[in-house]
Length: 267
View 1 (cartoon, rainbow, N blue to C red):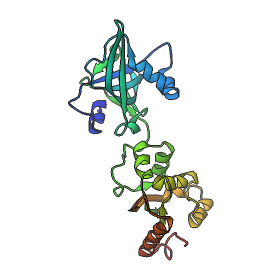
View 2: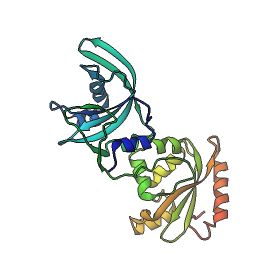
View 3: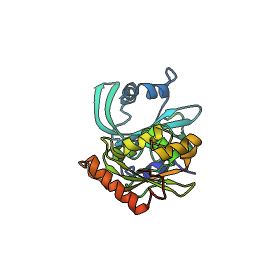
View 4: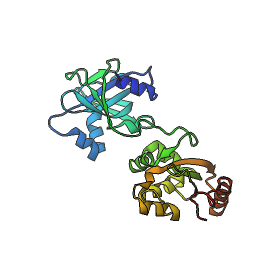
């Protein structure tokens, strides 16, 4: 059995912090739809309470209640301020903790241990019932320790995973595409304003070819051919590098790997 506690602590949640699990459920309105369509209103709902239920709390783990005892994880929030507005009204200020937990939001379903108690201390273990399909928690850790297949890259770009977007958009570089079907390689450079993220986004939007002549021919013959491609980074480039300098570095790797003569590069 996997518990939400195990999942979050392994992601870096402070084990010494005072944490509450909170399940929002309101028969008067669809809170999940509110969360999806009007996040600010949902947060106002979460931050306004008739009792001082979050007194002394460092973090809340937020869920939206679904059928029966099922509850959908929608984020980790750090409490930054608390005010008593009236005898029966408390307002809290919270900041969402995004970096470690963003790709888990809306995907993790737990079984609530006690439907009557909508806020409980984290010591009350709750079983993870379902984890919706995704990257299986492949977080961005380092520029040189990953190889993404096209399906993973497509998911990262389409769902705008923040850790990947943040790190790939702030750097330029030389990248490698490997064709696992033939073993052939393609070397490219990313030197635009949005860095590697911007260049790789073009591969996703073109079903895998990024407007490269040879790759485009493969995709035109077989629209699913991009599933054979794997993406990785060979070298990082300075943010101030010129297009001419980046292309020189790109050519160096083409020569080293022989991608013009034996690979997928055509210039």
